[in-house]
Length: 544
Ligand SMILES: O=P(O)(O)OC[C@H]1O[C@](O)(CO)[C@@H](O)[C@@H]1O
Image (cartoon, rainbow, N blue to C red):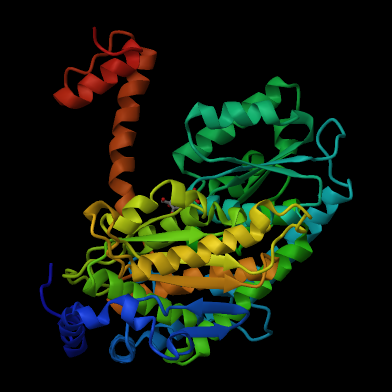
């Protein structure tokens, strides 16, 4: 593999940041001092598009930010972002554009890809989704025995469901269409069996979501669900629709069910929740108008992201701080801790978005990366996280945290005020306290009660969890992800790393099929360890 060529880690500004990181280890730069600086919050926070981003508890100074903006310029990130948003084939390894931002574009302005305006087909799919969801809601479209649909089962995995699950949970308070939404993603029968106990087959509509329509888990689950519906005496295909790419096996004939909605090869799975992947289930669950509001919020952040200069550009500032923490301060993990239970499925979505996009080892020009790209993302809602892994956050190996706060609660506050405060106020007391405790720490004679502090965090504030604000949050994380990639000069839109496991599983599946069809088939030709596991699978128990 070529060993020379442009790498951001070989630029002068990267060297300056490395030197600066050493400087930032000095005691005077401990966060307990930085947060005391006059104007610290005003100088290290941004407010735009109804989104407040506080990075005052990040281990940065004005000099740090100046160097990071120089890094962004060196990486030419604004040109790269515009190239992506304007339809250039930035996904060079798959020779594709990456136009997830087009899925929520409303302007009449064309977005050309290969000289063709993609907005025509995007608008057509949005109109198709609106019309379909209205027919389901007004009872024009019913199950094969005439019952109205009340259960929506999304059958898909990875980007074909994670973003939708995050948004559906976030907007639970708006789900007033009488629909229950279920997610059948894992091939483990438990997922299918538990959903079976919750649905009424006659009023169930399955949405099989798969760009390729070859993903083994999704195809297996779709077959299981269709077999189950048929066993209930139903015409299964009158209880299914598909969301898939044009020309896939799910785009025609028997497989497509009542209707097919197209997803496009220029929108990657983990970036697809604002396309039909999220549009069909979310319009059924929330109503198309709320899905529209969600798209508008995402759109506002896209416009901000594309045009705001670096110092005011919230996703870019956040991406730069993420790189500062990862590549210069040495943190290898990043937590997303929303102090809002409706955001409980945000971290699983952000895991795929970040780790499948940026967990790479070569640059976009195929040079070895000699800096890590991508961090381990995890998270749980607060205050639960405080009773789970915050011991380590405070006194163990540190990791940066993105806190998320929602100013207005989704539910009216009752008159009951345990300890003199409402639950929402209690939630906020903890949101505020945790970021402070992590930054400032606490001295103590007894070592076990000493808090080192100097543990960085950012806090994102949203006015409320409206469809538009959830759209803003989604677009913020998508933009942060791609800006990080543009700085590292990697391709965030391919995912060859998922292929090897699938290939080995395909070979094992053939062995299992052979044994299923011929009891005499043995695994003596397999390596010892693989043989042990296959024999356990068929023995149905551990060795005596
Ligand atoms: O939509 P498909 O083709 O079933 O793929 C499902 C998921 O599998 C992956 O291809 C690999 O994890 C993801 O990128 C994608 O979201």
